[in-house]
Length: 237
Image 1 (tube, rainbow, N blue to C red):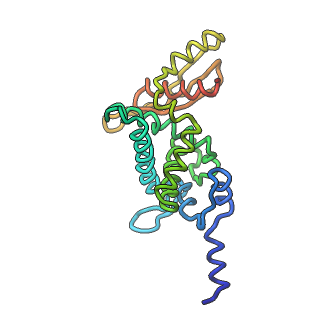
Image 2 (image 1 turned 180 degrees about the horizontal axis):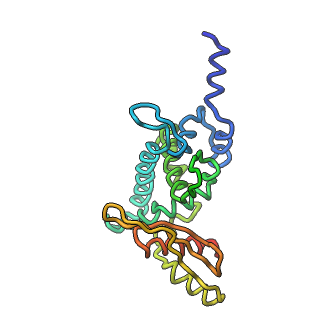
């Protein structure tokens, strides 16, 4: 065996920047960063590899979404043994809802790791949340379920998992109360509205005293406004 060639190949399976991110953010260093690099690659920057499939993070996102659901469901099942299925489902949905994953992705610095080629288009927050799910998929394939469960639960608990499952806050009302108290006007602007296949889509921006303070998407104006208000509430808080 050509040992020089072997070690050269092994060395180049690790991207130093990706390895440093994983070590500094999650506390582990992978033997290979190939899966993790793929988890950061948006479809806009991907290439076709076979059968029309691209080397984007979309397949890993599909896998990570299911792994995350399983992790949160497992935790809630063990912690709340006296609650019926319907209540557990509501609690899980509060944890894995899109705006939470988007915000967590930003907290973990995923937006700085993404490989994108959007041109003049803006990067939607959902791209960051989707990348988080893809990263969870990569960790699962690399490290296994038990490792992933412990790691993701630790991250979620650190960011208030047990409070989130009981969270029924009307952020829009709370923000209006804040605005009245501090004499700051609020304005929700519709940036985009379209109908596709009988379903509506809204993209809303919130201005607080004329300053952009949140932007969100939803299948109704009310949902998108509530998401915007939640973003702004946490920023102002």
